[in-house]
Image (cartoon, rainbow over all chains, first blue to last red; front, side, top):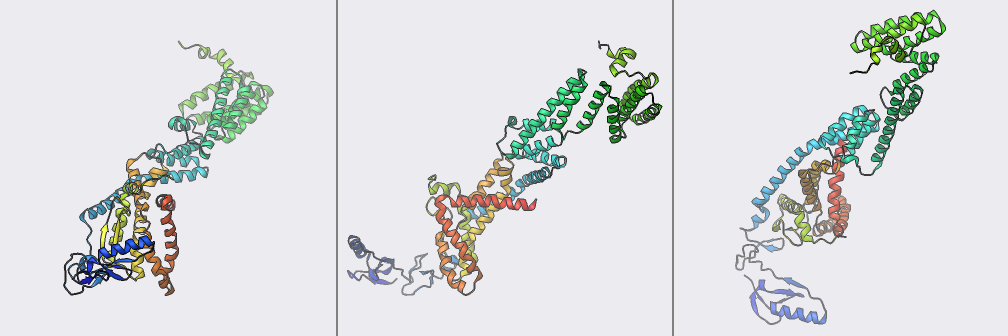
Length: 355
Length: 178
């Protein structure tokens, strides 16, 4: 242990108990006085602690007059010095860090299913943006299976369903999410507008159905056209409109228009017995009003074709039998009866109420 | 600005403090710097510290000072990557997901090196840069930005960093993978 002597009062003690004040070695009492005086004069003093190079900083062992090697400006004995370079991690820290790594592994495994859902959502979103609604639907459904409250996935699936003509599914998805409430945003606005358009279109279609059932085929066809304009994505709606136009033309005795529509339908659906039957019916009408045998010959050819096409399905066969009978009656008598009148005359049992 | 005591923030984000100081200790051992004192967590300022020997070796001081920044950032990214989809994108009410997000965010919040650490790098960088040390040259802008961010902690820059790293990086990784 090195001895020090106070430069102010001359007191001697271990140098480690002294302080360096403005470059002077002072005992703690004198140092305190100097500091007080400096405070009173409002001047600054530089104070440094004095390190005894013969005493180990860590174990405090006194090595007499032997100065110890300095590490970071502090004396350490040969026994303590190696420990400074290999400071151990406490066991609790090792456990904590190991636990952290385990948690990280768990987090990555746990996040995997969400990664799949997120991936499905992003891919579905891209397909919706590319207007490929049908292939987007299963992806968005997969995302929702994992994240049922994901508003973005709900809106995208609703949009895809709406624009793929899957109105019931869209309604179920959109109204099933928090009672149909969504946070305001461009996607929500777009889907709401599409939903309103579709809703309006479906109401129009229902009105058209009622008008048709009331025998107002012309008004029904016009309303159905309005519905079809609102529902361009609805599958088969354009064909249904064509069918109604044909019925309206028949009811108005506009057989040229009826034939034109039937020809177009048959051209587009050359494997359908129903379209073949409609064409045969139109040709029979033309034969009935003109007497041109060419219409009759072609009507019979098409009826034969319709029978062949209907052979594969019992339901189609049943329908084929019905219109074939009426068409053949029309060809034979050149009388044009609408289905209701025909049934009234030849199948009265059909109009009887069921008991 | 919401005045929240530092000790409370430290308590709420204690995993980050522990990881930060453990990173310092690990790198001190790796670069053979004497360690005089260590505190992995306490309710005080600073919340943790590693008192170590100084050196004139720039590589050593850079990694010992900046190491925890990189370690904490990487842990933050990994934990948040695993949790950001259920929490931010998919709106899943998953407590485990939120736990992992808290863990990632806590670690990310304590990524910044202390001003003391930055001072050490800043002191050695000019001389090393003059000798053509690429790391010293690169360290200038990094240290300058971190210095500013360190002072901006008052304005929650550390939380902002954690959130930015915990959202933007996982999002970028996710977008790159899908």
